[in-house]
Image (cartoon, rainbow, N blue to C red; front, side, top):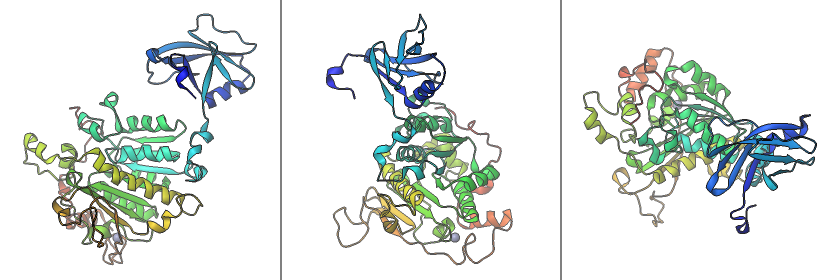
Length: 425
Ligand SMILES: [Zn+2]
């Protein structure tokens, strides 16, 4: 641990698993790489080069007791038989290996179980990107990340990525954010529009333990919903209402009401969905084709990151409870709490929330800044999970989408090439 008296002294870090590999090998010496924040005296040591380095790059030499150092190395690291290391005479801090990385979560969640769970996250915007990283922080070990957009300036205020990621595919940038928390995470990147690659989507849903749909369009939600029902997988759908005045989260559990049942209920209002991005809003039919690019800007109105966070937080909690279901852990009691399948949240008393109670209201009516769980019941006429046999053909499917007023699907451009429709602004 670095204490105040260590200020000014050099500090070194090394990955525990890489170090163990070297100790177990018959090699006496190895060349390595160092990355140093010069003014802070902090150096990270590696046996192989990083894809994207930071700070000043250094030549490092690792040697066991009987090994010889590379004469021109910038840093000489001595490795003792017990696996401890010192760099130019200073003790090296060893970054804990896989099993110890999340040991502080022990008791709260079942780490062995979570590390083998696979989460498919569809949409890596202000919802999906922080959710992905939160799940990684909790110990979820496997991810499939689907999004064909790139990180743009207008994303940054609410996104997990930073200025350094501008222009990158969100799948790549978010994968790096996950690895920053869990270098052992297994991550499959899908820079595609899932609605146009249904075979891939189906494959991924089959492999997933949980699916988190964090997109801003109904097309992907419908396709996801259909496949969740077909393959009996748990799925979560989260979204923000205009300017993040509020939001909602729906959970599909196999055998229970599906997302289509929600759409048919009185609770669901899809007219006021938050519009975060002109291109995707046009694709989803939220902005009519005749509206000029200039005027379309007025449609794009987002809320604060802090207004999205409650929705993301609920998605993460529900996901962890579902992934841990049936195991004894600190969050087991939440299985009883999260019995509803639809949760609504209001950040401020505005528009559709105007008549909601104040925060201090105690008469049981919905108030701002508190979650409300609702049990959406099964719609017996649901085209997806109800008694009616439907979705036999693509035409019935499209008809059912249109009947739900889900925008202009005839305008969906099937030729969109991943990434190319997202100019960097
Ligand atoms: Zn249904």
